[in-house]
Amino acid sequence: MDMKLWINGEWTDSADGATVEVENPATGEIVASVAKAGEKDVLKAVAAAKTAFEDGRWSGLTPADRARALWKLADLLEGRMEDFARVESEDTGKPYEFLSLGGDLPFCVDNLRFFAAAARDTGGHHAGEFAEGYTSIYRRDPVGVVGQISPWNYPLLMGVWKLGPALAAGCTAVLKPATITPRTSLMLAELTAEAGIPDGVVNVVVGNVGPMLTAHPDIRMVSLTGATETGKAVMKSAADTVKRVHLELGGKAPSLVFEDADVALVAEKLSLAAYCNSGQDCTAATRIICHKSIEAEVREAVVEAMKNVKVGDPFDSSTQMGSMISEKHRDAVAGFVQRAEKDGGSILCGGKVIDRAGYFFQPTVIADVKQDSEIVQKEVFGPVVTIQSFEDEKQAIAMGNDVVFGLASSVFTRDVARTMRVSRALEFGTVWVNDHLPMASETPHGGFKQSGFGKDLSAEAVGDYLVTKHVMINTAS
Image (tube, rainbow, N blue to C red; front, side, top):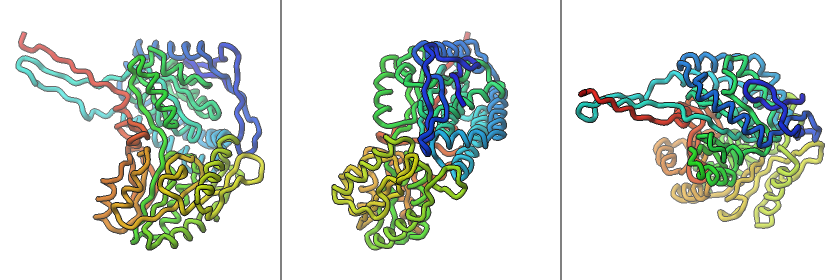
């Protein structure tokens, strides 16, 4: 299925005729060719978005009208879930039934319906007399044209997380999906037209054009989901035009397992959170930190769970874990594991490339790792989890917080008071208790420290695309 760019409500060839091939990482086969944008295409897309914003064809609609279009978009996506899920699995190598159709697509539909409702939220609006003879009104207006850069691990889902709140707020957008997984974002853009979203409001460009978006003076805000190093580059570029920046970056999630935890539950939840989407998830469970009294029991249970993961063809209904996104990334994950073993780590299971077509890696558990080692401190982004131990609550919290990231974490205990103490002390945007990974459209998702700032999901996400304006009226004259 070959595709063009989506600019100003229509399919558009790239100005220079360039294309990029899309590879199925589970087979190594080329499945599509997509137009690759250059500078002229970016300028055209931003101009379309600017015109659409300035003439009010979207921001000038009532919240009810914007909500109606977003709800229709959700209905259209729901009607084509199987088509979208199949393309998503072809582009990413993730399991079709277990993840794309069974998780990502239903959540995308729910997200869009939530943001449709959030478009009509009137909370936080104020008016009053704060100075004698004057009435003040606080308006929350859309920030303007936004540039949005989404990642390859959840192409459609992250695109929805960006477009949903931006459109609810009344912004117009230029979305740049990852070059290697662009197709479902382009398919979604086509559905926006059918949903009644006006031309120019949503534009999708594919290629290595992120720096062009962050540097463009007409883009008022840049939202990125990606690596921390990319986030730093976006911040530096955005500074030249003083853009608002929204960043959801890397993670290194700790799971603190206390002595009263249900070990079977720990193994069930944390193995899933380690191998789901082949571990290519910034919220993945990557560091199991358990009380020394149950370390041996936790090791045994987690290893058994990881050994039983069904890895294979994404379109086999029994597959739980598919391929890595590319040969380069698979080899990078293998390098992390090899260096961890050289550094004294013990490979309890997995640790090797799977010998088959595509880019597969075994679910892996590593023990006997040092707190300052690379495998503990850096994001691997693969189906790899380490196991460490602690002696008391204070040490557990210190070990959990001792990374530069602060996106997600979890706590396993039956003690309610401990849950409250530990969740308060952990420096992470999400703390799950006796679970790891679940999300809801209503709940904010975002990080602390070098995991970024700003929120995806929830009404807070819509607020990130709004700017407060103070209107002060002289009522004495």
